Image 1: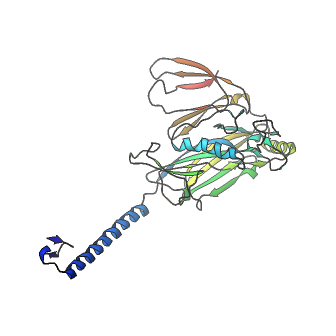
Image 2: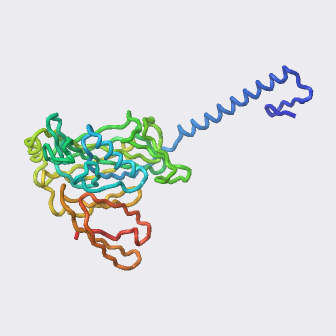
Image 3: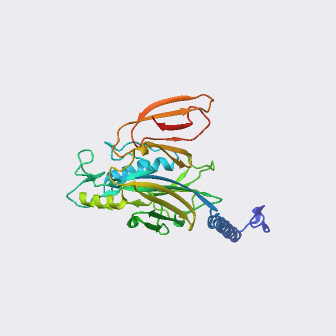
Length: 345
């Protein structure tokens, strides 16, 4: 017997051509009903995705080369691609390497100066620098940020940012990402089948997908600070605004106008970073704590002393590192991986 719709049965041996056509039509109708219902369930689930009840923000300030150069794209990807996978990026001093990444909580005015004069080049306050900076036109400060939703999902369209500077109001800015799609600078991350972030089965939205798509995390290159400096006079003027004791810059991020996260950094005039800043700074990430060696720009190798004691013993390690050298500690409980503290020797 052939059961078509749960109520009509036809004998195979007595079926006529017209009966076969009727059976085909009923099968097509049934298939259409099933497909329509399945699509409605899928769309309904997507539309009813639980919106986050809170968002944890992790903000990692850094500097990147001027956007007009190919080095910007390289540095951006060196920075964001590892972060999107939950691993420590390749970090280090930008002495001799324009695409190296420094995670910092203290900057100098030259870190955010960009030269727009076609006849000049600029790198960290030095006009017409020698190789490997001979083609560079400056850099900007970025407040890179993770957003990790809790109690549901979030999307890029709901994100907004505000940047505040206590001594230089011209640096204040705010914007909404509501009209922006996902991109290589605004990455959406979806958990894979294992239900965990930052594992090999994650999916990344960064190719123009609608910013309204719900995701399990966002990673944003962040709001940026920049100032035009086409002469030493321009740099001097910016230095005078920041003043000797430095200024405070705060990066703020919001989801749906609430769920705020913030991070403050210090901005000093050229050459004004105090020696007390020769230290390891720590930055919280979703996967642990990122320690970064922070020193005055272009500073030489600094002494580092660390200790590990999770196994009950004190073990000191002395080493050297250049500014920007960073390492991510996940606190796994393994004495060879976890650090008690670090300090400059």
